[in-house]
Length: 497
Ligand code: 6PG
Image: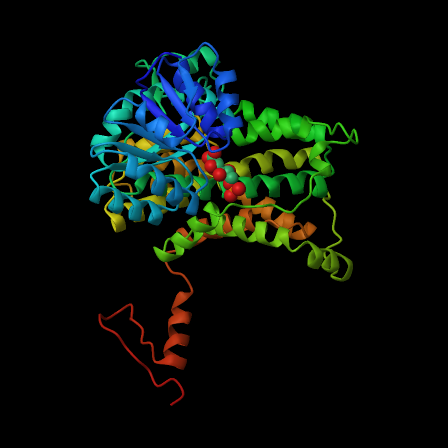
């Protein structure tokens, strides 16, 4: 390729990096990639034949062939690898160049790196990217944060490659485009009818913060769906093709979302080795790279409840205690109840219960973003966050349009559950959620995410919680003092006297 001046260089040609570069090249940008494994560079060139994309043999070549001021995007594993790549890359850059870290970096690492880069007059964006391989190739959701001038420089590239969604379609309506967009629509330029799933989110590490919370919500929704699956299969006796059909139907309605859509597909897949349904031969030990745990840790730090996410992380941890669970399954007796009604009669309750629980899960994520925005001064526009999550990302769902709408109409909304439309969506389904949790308890099926989501809802609507007793106990044994409901000030009582 004769081109000597590339619009952007990308370091890390794994699945995400390669596909994102090809996506950029599809939109007419001249891009260059580098990976320390030369085979990955070759694979990129092969797949990008005929497009303005090539690979560099080393970092120095990559840097030397970029238009100045340069833009370099990193898609390498979060943590030490990012620092190692920066250590090699930055001495070769010049003042005014831009580096974008698109891995799942911890926001505190991003803050540190932004300071280090600012001292060298290098712009550093932390940009969450979601959507996996298909998203990177055909339209991801991008969550950039950092210096505005840096974002503006790559804005045309990011807007071109990000997912496009039909704007304004509410969850109750048929949503085309957001989740089912044909490839031609995904590649077409944004119009008045389409909004793009990227926006400048603010300064500092807010891009990586928003991606972390995205993943916390992702963990929560996935655990809720695992519980729904357990109830369907173990509780009600549905088989894989039946569950596929149920999820396909749900995906046609208000639950329309990426996770529902892929779950239906998962239930259809058979294992080439055994001929069984593939999901049945997959080990139940769920792995994690840590972003869900970070969200819960951060929620504890900011004192924002994120019960659904906490349950999701704990259940992945419990899934890892395989041997102990096997011992427990042999010795600990549980309920021997069976569902007394027709299994089909349970389905509308389960659909409604998941609907309510998923809205409450998004609510907790947005509440955390709201608190973080105040604590770290991000000044996040939550309507914009909901908009860029409408397409491309793992948690994309029709209901996000209602969430976007709620924050757009009421930017100061204290909590999503105080929006009348969303409140109604939850309250009209709360009986179903209660029934499903009761049924699971009767059947001895663990549903910590469904149950704790319901508990969060009930806690949120309690004008008085029983935590006054905790205050009394704290004062009893530790003289920690308490406040009264009828008088200002702090009080201590000699409880034993
Ligand atoms: C996405 C995902 C992705 C995440 C994986 C793995 O938005 O595309 O969030 O970024 O890394 O889902 O996460 P765990 O290994 O922690 O489950």
